Length: 357
Image (cartoon, rainbow, N blue to C red; front, side, top):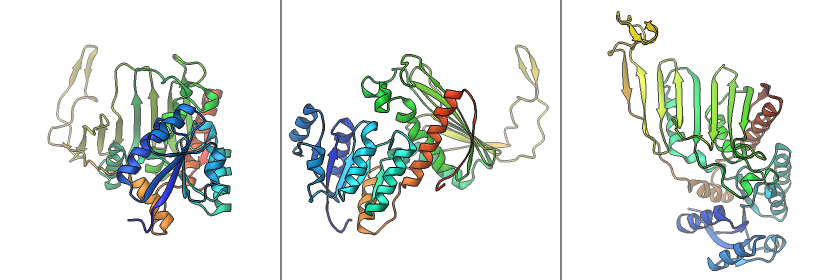
């Protein structure tokens, strides 16, 4: 438990801030949710109805010496400005994702953090998803052997939600909305240098921003990762499909339905079996002997997203190190920029990136 209670206020009180508000009040006693500012009068009214002190401007909020922490939950194009202003006002800052519109803006925030000595963290809440944590556990335990392919997908069929997500000037599009999560998961899971990025973005129903993309990553070891987001897909595919030299894992959905098929014996001689297809026989794709493989259950790992806030308070107390680092977010931002460049140029972008570069 925190040594003290930290007073928190929101800049931007839309649906995401409302979600933060409810969870912090109910499950993070280290914080007192105190106030809010939003440019929309209706959101100001909503905050007031929730019992928050409503400030007339962001400057008024930042000038309040009683505020310890500011959560920036505006549209993406305002993240950098408000985060820097809050840090320079002596506040600790939690910023919604994507942290900024580009890496230069994030570097400016990191410089402000260094100048002010305040704590800054990005709300990468998908690091607590059970599907991600389960796969991370399997890779750490080496169950699949030497990894050579990862496929991560989030697919839907309802299109891009209306509003700011369709506006490029506000940071709309699926790369910034969902790519930032899926790339973060891959890059935090694989501790290797990244050497290539190739990305194609779709504009199926929305021309101004990407409503889907397919991004391919090549790591220093040759490991191939594919990240796909689509909002016009009417038949789904597994959330994760991962292959190693002695096993394959599939996680089908958010509820962690799936399995691991693992080789028990790589030396077993193939049975004299031929698979007959409509176009002819094949021995290569015939099944393995039934004694040479086994199906294992997923070692499902469940943690609690609210630990992000518990950790934030513990960092302010000086008891813990941050779970989400700005340098990690800078790595992700640079990879997303390479993805946008790859799409513009219709070519693979050679890179040499790692966390901390």
